[in-house]
Image (tube, rainbow, N blue to C red):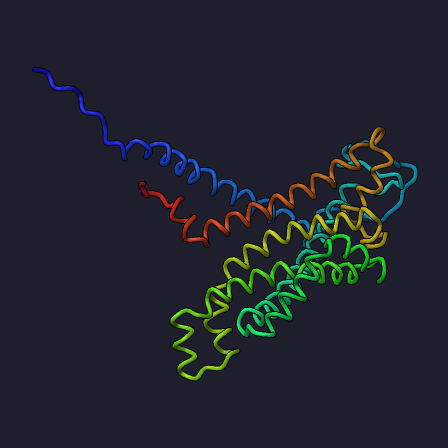
Length: 304
């Protein structure tokens, strides 16, 4: 008598879709990570080597060649004043990277100090910093607050950095506070406190190294948001004043020539898009690498 063919156990059926998903993640995530690193390297090199990469002066006016189409002489064409768009895009990388680096560094430092105090000390300090100060800033739209600050202080590079730093520290402070609350009751922290270590030493030696990973991920993503914020303020005329080249200011100049010279908006727009994309890819790669749960999903050789 023939025995019926036995079907595979039920618990083995879902493993194939899971394995295929993990295989796809293993093949795609490194590609996106390296793509983000490559794009970021291109923008960093463009910012550092701008005088050698772009031979022409980005502020040089040449009315005889105004609104010239892309050519061998002007790779990205010229704007309404005859300035070389390629040179202005290359030099604009300096402004964007400088503003994003300075803003994220300042906001991250404020977030570490204020968020660390709120999370580690607790009590009335946590109430004053978290409930009152942080919630007050979160209740105000960040971009509108930055516009108001720049309009009050006046357009300028450092005023722009100051305004974006004041409006951007809250996210880092809330993240640091949450991470400190999760770490401060761990056994090694309690042991260090029992041995008589001071609060500053405990925070710097035991708490900060264990909370730096999500903070770095947030900072890399924050770089992308800062580039967009700087471009927005420059588009509104509240960024770096001319003749300095800024991608947002270039888009503002191009809005009057979208039909007769669309390249004026295409190239700075692509620069903003690719720079934001690069920081997002790098941030995702850092999150996947530093998060043990995500790393376990993409680790090769793992099975369900």
